[in-house]
Image 1 (cartoon, one colour):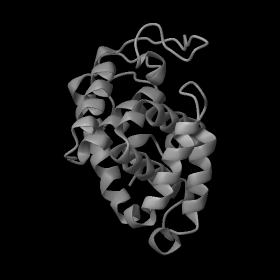
Image 2 (spheres, helix red, strand yellow):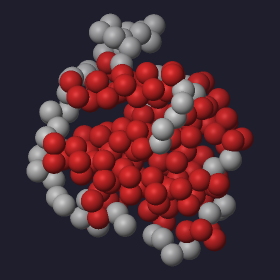
Image 3 (spheres, one colour):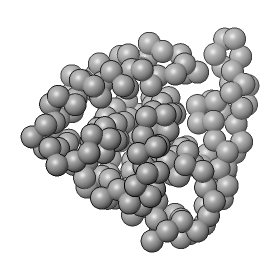
Image 4 (cartoon, helix red, strand yellow):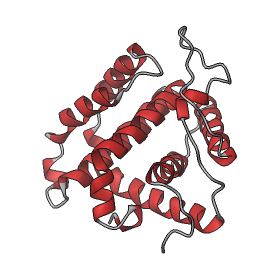
Length: 197
């Protein structure tokens, strides 16, 4: 399976993260609403600027700066590939699920709530993942460290937004930024998202 479109790495990552969240059925109305908002923004392919006013508000709607998207319409073949990749990542991530305890999720929520929506939250995510790395040795000893980091980032992302759905825009953006800055080289070196096994 390979890409039909010309989506950038960030665009692919955004769609995969959405599908990753949709993999798990969560009986939480606020969570479902936030996922739907995100999906609508991605489908619309809106071009957003980081046009944040000094009071922190976005003049063109609450999701405008949160997602900072410029995504073309997704063709059905790519949509299916995003779904397959997300399902595979969710399956791999389930092995690390127990490594991410509630206390860490709550700490990540507290730290994220202290930052402004337009601030770079990747330093918080990096700190949380560094804490988790030492707790996963027995489960991940045969995996490359970058793959472990990716799975931990995805599982922490999911657990946090399930717990606190209103943080989805901020944590979504943070997770995309984190993956792009820390893991893009690794993912591209193995031939792209579709080659993560």
